[in-house]
Image 1: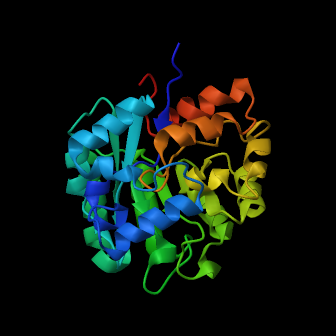
Image 2: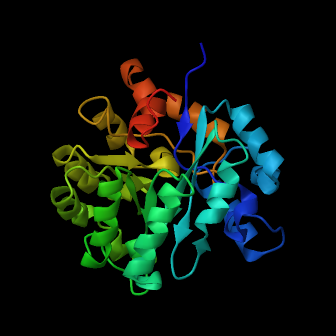
Image 3: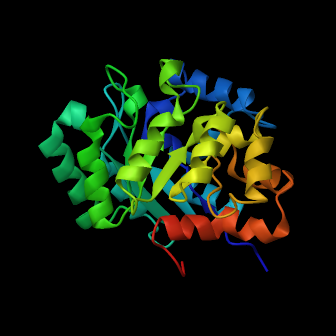
Length: 287
């Protein structure tokens, strides 16, 4: 029997130059560089297959994914409109799920809240992404400017997703400490953390230990030095809070699945890691 797999961070190259849409551009070269940096084996141009919608769907099919989650983004330097995410999901709603994004600083609070509600109620997206550390100026996730978005997500019963990791422009804002205030203030809010605050692994594990509504998605950083602690924790108390993500196009989907299977996760944890935790987080139980 094929194992069901939900890829929590998976975007096609054609979505934006940032993902390698246009050969010969600086962004395209960065995608190739990052693939090499995170351990891609084989052709570092593998992502060019998803430069078309059909190619992206073929990548998902060949990797054997049950579902791919396409994540939006809204920061001062990069905006992936929620309508674009919804258009991608419409290619194959049975296998694609979308996460919207807002920025209450860039848009203003009222406009951001209206857009977040439209993304969920009208476009059918399954959560909202915010990226405080990528703002201008950068902020921590417990900055009060974001609390109305968290409150709305809790009221709509959808997860909020936070961006983290070493690509945060100012590494001082790759600090998970602020998650504690969010988890305490919004106890019914499901929180997903992309990139898992790597390399600050122990710090974020401490927060996830305390707050069961915090879910870690280290994606491409799960395969980097210092990440064994995620695995060790998942084999114990973190088993319901660690989720798979390939971070495609920055890492091949199929290779990431194979590499994840070799990490040492217990058999009893694998289905939760690859599918069940994501289905619960996204409200897709039974999918």
